[in-house]
Amino acid sequence: MKFSSYIKLFIGELRRRRYSSGFIFLLILLASILIAFSLKDDYKTTALLKYSEEDSNNNLNTASPLGGIVSLGGINLNSGTTDPIDYSIEIIKSRDFLRNLLEFPNIRENLVAADYYDFNKEKIIYKSSIYDEVNDKWVRNQSKFKDIVPGYLEVHKDYYIKNLTLVKNRATGFLSISFNHSSPYFAKEFLDLIINEVNRIVREDDQSNSEKKLNFLMERNSKTLNNEVKQALGQLMENELKKIAYSSTKVDYMLEVIDPPYISDKPVFPNRFLIIILGIFISLISVILNIHISLYTRKEM
View 1 (cartoon, helix red, strand yellow):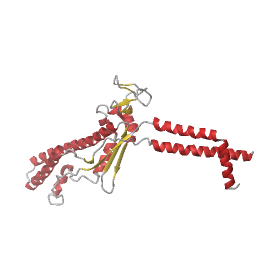
View 2 (tube, helix red, strand yellow):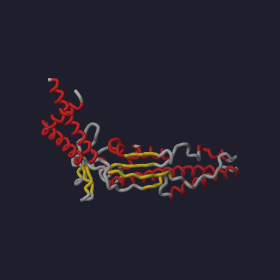
View 3 (cartoon, helix red, strand yellow):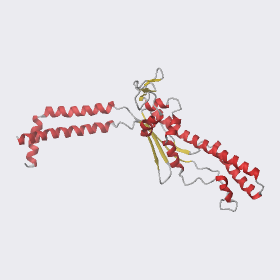
View 4 (spheres, helix red, strand yellow):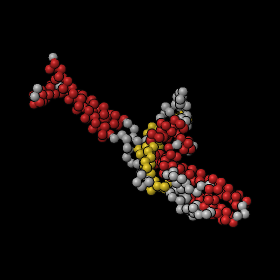
């Protein structure tokens, strides 16, 4: 059959089946509109960070005759080859880090039980089948693998990692971090909390290590009579004191904010316009296939 003849037959069949074709088109289109507006809004906030380089560098030359004392007792002033941004990413992604975050008020509830954000009431509305906000009580059903109160392992796998995005720019070394949530306000506050906690944890860990090294050096210094060794130990102690002073005063100790988290005014999901356009496309395809199958069946008969 020639294409022109097929087109004439197709148009004729479309006219004959205009009501059924129109019904199919409208049914699928209405379904796509219903789906588009039934989906809950999801908001995304992003921050751009960089490694906060320490300005109190160690001036002791480990290649000098006294430099061998640097490794005394296992002390190594070099931080190794671990990239600070990669290290920060692994901290943020870790289960232990999330367990620390869950100690803060309402974090667990907002991650697991949030349904949507009510802009009129300016509050997060929780899923009543999971969390009873009035009585401040978890009410979801307990199963073999899930307790009534969500554990940190479940929260980490199902609610934290899935909504967290960490991207390192290999050219600049900058870290882009983003988080998705039904509340644009919580997304921003939670990202602020993540950044603050990374800085606090690394700062306290470095302070503790420097204090241990300083105590060790002071003990060795009190036991040695060699002036050259005392001089080297004194330089090492000065270096650790600089580190302690720096960590005690630096707010953005590990990660420095270039572009802070923000409160998004537009949801990133769902894209209702795209869903409706896709619905129109599927409707047209369905009508065309319906007419084509009708013509093909008639030809076979």
